[in-house]
Image 1 (cartoon, helix red, strand yellow):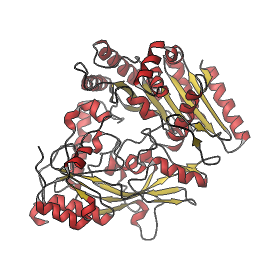
Image 2 (cartoon, one colour):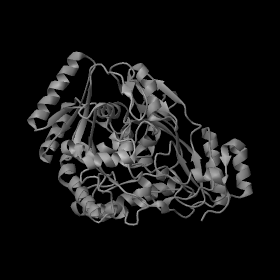
Image 3 (spheres, helix red, strand yellow):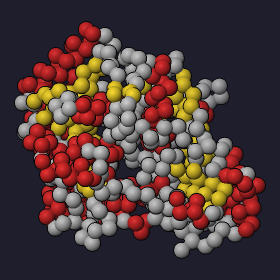
Length: 525
């Protein structure tokens, strides 16, 4: 249980931030306590703690002040950008939350194609502004409401555009980083006088891997206040849509091609993806199945259940389907891309469908996913509002994903559905995307769980899937790594050493490594 914040600590927060930027009001704290989503369903509501205070720092100096006050009074801290999921909140007692919404500046370097972003700038905002200059950012699968800084520095950062725009951690250039000890680190070219933000590797060794690890340390290694991220060409005018949400009237995109594709044979499907990656023609790709598509097509749980009962989408998409988007700088370039695409699909036994196959909604889902990654979260969380997954959530080669990772998650999910521990929305509800025009893929298997159902039990699926992954040496939880427990401990030990160096006062509310005893006495502060 958290203890009320001391009057002295509160007064210091007020002095550092101003009275309007610190709150211990119970009503405010309650709004920062609960969140449906992946963290809740995967681990359980026991992970959620009411914060002891909520702060809104607006500068590097104010972030440093919050960390130093936390260290003096033995408090934990957790910073979040746009708070996409449960682990953005407090996961231990006596935690001071840092809501970074006051730090929302964006700078665009058109000449060198990068953007310098603060924590609360969303991917959607970045896209709106950069498209004015013929540029486009990577959009993480979490959608346009997520922070690009967060996915680059602190979280797993893949998405449907990764085939062309890479994974967000690999788009990360220079970084301004406040460690838990309150020190300001400037990584990459930012650490070189007058060099600016253009490069991720400045003099000396790169620290970006230490900063975030494979899938991010979820804020446990400090607070990231600014980061430069690569931008990519956007061919055409800024994308616009009008109408009433959740479905819109999208504008036509010149020199573009958007289709659904279905393969009945998984070996052929994997072969097609290998060849499409090698061809370097895709601008967006993602795989869903009938369950997720039904969720996206419906606007209420009632409508979802009606669509599910009809089973119309399972007839076409029961074995999974892909959305592919091609965008080119000219008609001739697009014509070439389409010919290559259709040849590969045809030779591997795929069937191409117009995105209007199920009407206007179907097309709007496809185009808004392809351009803005806007429907993935909705598909993952309806109708229970809580999404877990059957492990492994992997970064793997395409053939490994299809031959090993996917069968593991399919079997685990089916076993839990048979025991009424998960919603039966279809055996195959797997989300995939291939990365960087290559043979590398991201795979996660969405499972819908009602946390208030007595039989609802998602954690076992994660544990069972992880165990089977280790037996086969498959990377899981977004990490491509040796699967044996002994080898995995090696990684954990290194991360633990890094954590001790970065957090000498043990004030980080770290969700990925255990708390550590103080190395430096607090009195020295």
